[in-house]
Image (tube, rainbow, N blue to C red; front, side, top):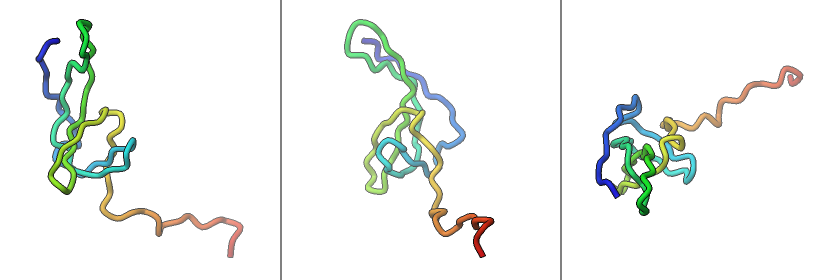
Length: 84
């Protein structure tokens, strides 16, 4: 297995994000293109490194990362046009 990896620039670096797979929020610390294979055949994947509030980091697929907002948007509801 090759130990080569490359940092990938992202607009959400150092911003608060949410992992949609687990629902956990944290700060996006890095996105790295890594060889994730444990066999002889290389398999490259972009992994997002997210630091939780506890200080521990975890990885997830970049496709699972979305911006997190400080305030939930639950209070804003569109009024039904048929309601009074």
